Amino acid sequence: MSFKEKVIYQIYPKSFLDTNQDGVGDLAGIKQKLPYLKRLGIDMIWLSPIYVSPQRDNGYDVADYTAINPLFGTMDDFDELITAAKELGMEIMLDMVFNHVSTEHEWFQKALAGEQKYQDYFILRNEPTDWVSKFGGNAWAPFGDSGKYYLHLFDVTQADLNWRNPAVREELFKVLRFWLAKGVKGFRFDVINLIGKDEILADCAENDGKPAYTDRPINHEFIQMMNKATYGADPEVVTVGEMSFTTVENCILYTRPDREELDMTFNFHHLKVDYEDGKKWTQMPFDFAKLKELFHTWGTQMSAEQGWNALFWNNHDQPRALNRFVDVDNYRVAGAKMLASAIHLNRGTPYIYMGEEIGMLDPDFESMEQYVDVESLNAYQALLAEGKTEQEAFEIVKTKSRDNSRIPIQWDSGEFSGFSKVTPWLSLGKSAKEINVAKELQEGSIFSYYQKLIRLRKEYPIIAQGSYEAFLAEDPQIYGYIRRLEEQSLLVLNNFYPQETTIELPEEFLTGEILINNYPNEKLIEKLTLKPYQTVAIYR
Ligand code: NOJ
Image (cartoon, rainbow, N blue to C red; front, side, top):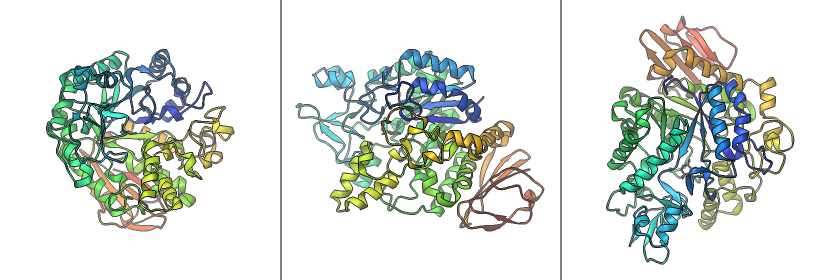
């Protein structure tokens, strides 16, 4: 099966299922729930980092790329997980954090101790540039007492690697070969468009310095080298690059098959439509016109140039899309299905973030004490420093924090929601009693809607292979698109609002068949009324 036909499910291991009762999820917990994932119908499971790490950024600060963090279990647990998943027809995708390592990694420690070989593994300079770290503050920190500075685009404990050094590249390629030999069939590459830094680093006042270190031409060369040296030899391996602050032009280059870089890319533009003036730590209702324009631009351009999108609403860095785009007090279920259709019938490979398939919500925390994420804690301090009151700063963190999606999965309505028998590492969501897997499987319909979407992808080649064109681009409520493959067409209409709206159905679809709908099936008539958050897909 090509990566275009697959559906990928993301697990944040810390919060999936705790089987050894330490309050943290583990590999044995993932293995235990494989039948649940099989029932959903997904093909591949992406695990957020499971390696040895001080967990300052929940594993995105790797201290040993080829050892399992005892927090999650052992290498035997991992081997068992891969085997058990394979038996059920599912594969494992690992998260490769290759832009930086934890400062606890032995490479950094040896560098600090004065070994020249390892100092060349990092980006050291006599003078820092003006770049701002993505987690706040200047992106450079003193390198011991050497008088030099090392670059950290993220936390001060995440030191950027020097990809210009062939020895660094070879170390990282060895890591990929290690996991490939274990039977891993997919890689998600963390902020992979930041690995290629220019030889001479320059100040850049624009956008916190991002243009100076993002999507540099050499970045493509490094990914091509990685492809050739490792996964490129195995057509079954699926690769997805996380692209920070990128452009559609670059993502076409990263994913066009003849370039031999990656299968697909994640971009985040559609998840910044509720950022005031482009700033994350603000509050603003989402800008629907902008959301549509982004979907249409990426959809059409990637389609025209043979690029490939990774499609998603949620991940471990985003508050739940349901809370951002839907009136969840009144339309949680209809809204969850509409969002799912908008992505799963689109052109690209869909990703489901754990809990999305039951319509989980943000946790509704009550105080700052409940947050643990380093970025959120830094942002809170920065908001106070800007003059916001504690209450104002808290409200902003509450809507934007990454902890919103990192809370434990709500398996049932019991104490600790079936995630653990002890207090979890991060507070549970307030909705656990009403929204949980047990209840959803018994009487809900979001899970079965996802099952159907996944099934349709396998049954109708137009979903994986069809081209993309915008439909009703100017409509103030509807996000619509048409997929085409030879003689077949698929029209997908999504009402993003709690008000009804009527559209004119093009004649060619009047005789079509409704593939999926989140309201009881309706007659296809010229003046078609869509109910609140209605989605309908018409095939002919
Ligand atoms: C993106 C990851 O998804 C995020 O969780 C992490 O903090 C940064 N990259 C740094 O690795």
